[in-house]
Image (cartoon, rainbow, N blue to C red; front, side, top):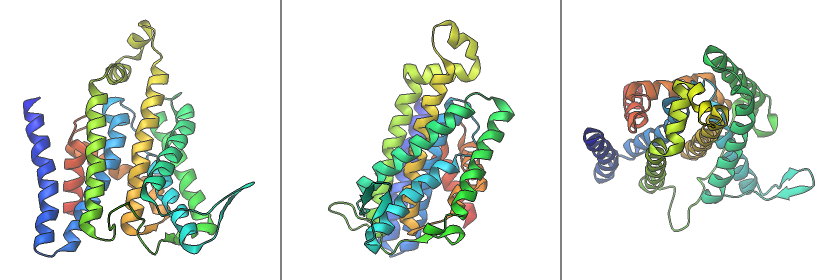
Length: 287
């Protein structure tokens, strides 16, 4: 536990000091690169709840990443083009407010995770992996055929969305927003892992029959964890789309789902800082 605490402090300090050094030497690309690490780590923290604690190997988690990204893209697109978003009898003007976009992206991703989870939680093992992959491909091809929002060419956003009191176009300020959200997600993960719910989820991963003997429903526990996992990953998707000011079907691809799993494996499944270390090594090797 002490060693993990030291690793946590060291990794977070490195994530914080590298952008500050880049700001001092005027290297904005390095700040953007570390911001990418932070956002991918946030997405992997979400998956780590399902995979690391619950043992659910989801090869379709990019669905929630993409849903969050498209939620941001659609809301910002309608706000920037001054065209209302028509949803049956309702009409919305869109928004460029980050907090509101985060709320919509998180809720949309949680809803998608709930609907998918109700079906996939009836399977286990390789069947769980294949069914999540199938749902991922369904969403991917739907995005490709969604011509109203760019289809396979994706959707560009002209300006990064705003946060009260901050200039989000400044790389260091946008990094600060993402870094704080990652800290909050890590705190949630650490509390969840040691909570009665987290212990029950871990027990359901190992021997679900023992969970049933004490009057708990392992399927319901895993479903709640899957929804929380999807919501956090969806928030990361909204941040990733805001970072690039672009959203495309590639955010829903199975390759991205595989990359998120690789991030967790590199850093250690179930470990608090595993997703962060994995994201840092992955992006560093990538560049």
